[in-house]
Structures are given as C-alpha cells and as structure tokens.
Length: 214
Image (cartoon, rainbow, N blue to C red):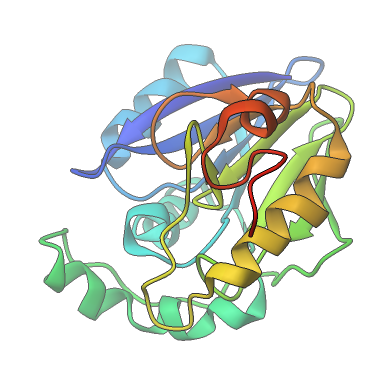
C-alpha cells in the first residue's frame, strides 16, 4: 500500500491518498478541500478511486467529501455516528472559517469500533477514538503498520479538546488504550504536520509519553 499525503485547506490538513498496489484502486482519507490538488494526485498516479474515508466531521477534514464522492461516483464511509452533529453544521463551519460553501451530507456507511473498510485488496481496521470529537475514528493497516489518526495524535502533541463535546480524559484514554497496544512500530499520518511513530510518541510526547500522568 502506498500513502500519498496531500496538504489541503488553509489549515494544511493532511488528506491522504491510499493506493492498493496490486489493483491500483484507491481510497481518499479526509478530503477537506482543494479538490483540484486531490484530483491531480489521483490522475498523476493513474489510480481508480473506490471510496472516501472520514476520520471526523470537522470542516478541514470533510468539507470536500460530498463533492468528491459525487465527482468519482463513490461512497463515503465514516466517521462514527456521534459525528452527525458536526457534519450537519458543515455549512455553518465553512462560513465561520472562510471555507468555500460546504454542504451537509449523510455518509453511505457510518463506522463503529471493530469495523473494517476495504479498497482494492487492502483492509483497514477501524478504531473509535473519542476525545477530540465524540465520533472520531482511526484507520489502521496492520499489514503495512500504518495508521491514519486524524486529529487524535500529532508528532509531539495531541488533538484539541476545547470544541463542543470534546473531552481531554477521553482523548488520553483513546490514545493509551486503542493506539499504543497496536505497537511502537506503527507509523502514523496525523491530521496536520509530519508523520511519526507510536514508539516515538510514547518516548517523547509531553502529553501521552509513558510516565506522563494523565
């Protein structure tokens, strides 16, 4: 599986293009905007988009999802149903943050902890990781040791929890009980900024490193 990171929107959100190398079929994770950049990456890599995956309902992660799904004629999977209230606010969110007008939508499939999503011959495990938002999910390829974590965890930081229905204790619990057991060798693509590994964050992250009290 190849992973191409495409920073989009004024927030430089990491949209990811995941490609099954055996079939050249792809999934797009968190298309928050700048759809021309995403479509260009798809065309340059000669892949066929099979579905769109969403980690959560914040505007910089999903404002372009409906338009892109319509463009490619593909379904939207994720996030967890507890994100419905965020997705319903997309028109308001886009105005507030100066984004192009975004429409609310209903994903073709809501996701829950323990689900899997597929594209081509690849399978990703779904982990419900509330805290940054209540219905945030993380996608993990156990085979390739890669995780798409949205705004749960960053290199050297963690997600904000001062948004409506955010919860700091829940976020810490999600990271320590859902992500760390997956293994220190997992490389993760965060919603913003550089990639890192779970092991590096367990050693040095000032919020969730081993030995840091919750």
